[in-house]
Each structure stands twice: as C-alpha cells, then as structure tokens.
Image (cartoon, rainbow, N blue to C red; front, side):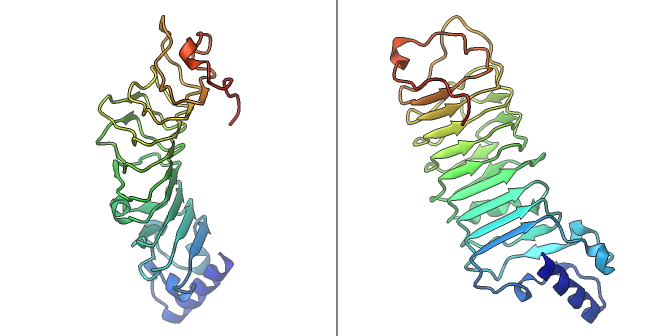
Length: 247
C-alpha cells in the first residue's frame, strides 16, 4: 500500500486534477497473478478532494490475474478479469455483482461481512468452494442464490438465514455444508444425499418428537446448542462420528 500511496501522490501532483480512477496498471505489472489489498487509501492525505465511493479500481488490463483479495475497500472495483480462479472480498468493497456470472474460471468465491448482499447468480463450471459467512442472506430461495452444480463446499455461517425454501436446490454433489449461527427453526428438508459434513450449531430448532431426517451419507454432524442435541440417534446414524464441538 505504501507503493500505491507514493504513486498516487506523484500522479496527483503531476496532473493537478481530480483523480477518478486508480491507475493500477502503472503500479503493478499486467502479468500479475495475485493481488491483495487491505483497507482504503486515504486520498485526503494527498489533497485529493474526492469521495472514496467515486474512486474506481479498474482491473481490466490484468488478464492473467488468478487471485484477488480486497479487504474493507470503499472503492468501486470493476472489470474483474475472467482469469480469476479465487475472489475474496471483505465488507463494503463495492463491485457490480452481476460480473460474477461472467467469471467462469472461479474455483473459490468468498464474500464476507456484506450487510446488503444482493441476489446472486454464479455460473462458473469450476466453482468448488463458497464462503458467505457474516453476510446477510435472510431467506434462502432459488431467486436469492443460484449456484452451479459442481460446488463441493458451502459456508454460510452467521448469515441471518431464517428459512430455506423447499424449492431451493443445493448442488447435487455437495459434500460440506456449514450453516452455523443462523436463525433456522428446523433442519432443511432438501439436503443433498452426497453430504458428508454438516454444521448446524447455534441454530434454535423447534423440538420435535422424532429425530430430524439427515442424509445417510453423513460422517460428521454438529448440532451443538440447537435444542436437538438431547435427542437420541436412531440405529441408522450409528456410523456418525461424535458430535463435533470445534471445527
């Protein structure tokens, strides 16, 4: 970030104009494979009188970029390159979420701490891992989240999920699902038969007279602090490992 600040000061002094776009291709080589930015640059330190929300981080020329992380950046980030295989954005980083549907090489997608996460449609045939922890989702419906069939692991912890629509379809080959810390009142009825690890701790399920139905494929199950931890497992669940207390 020191390099970027130094360059911005030089750039601003040279042009003596308001800057509306970060000349990032002049700072890093276009052959860059991985880029991680943490927090925003303080523009006012350099006498640049512009709202950070009007400042644009344009990645258009980074055609070889495979991994991009931006932590708590106020800038608009646009033209995410199709070469990305890993995208990690933390809190308030502004992007056009419609761009996600064009990132067909994505393997890992992480969107953390978004209080206004919009409806998402993701089409990457290579996507394997998704983590939306601490982003607000609410009710999980087919319109709220559209995922490709090939996803193997999903983490949606502390996402204020209060219900999962019966029409919502988890990826058919999903093996790992963490829904810890949400507001679910019942175990999802549409869990995929491929599921091996399921985390449901800190949801407050309504107690029922029988054990909720889980896929027979499960190897690990955490229902700690859910209200159903006092229920007994039927014989069909004898193969389960002991209830996890820490992942």
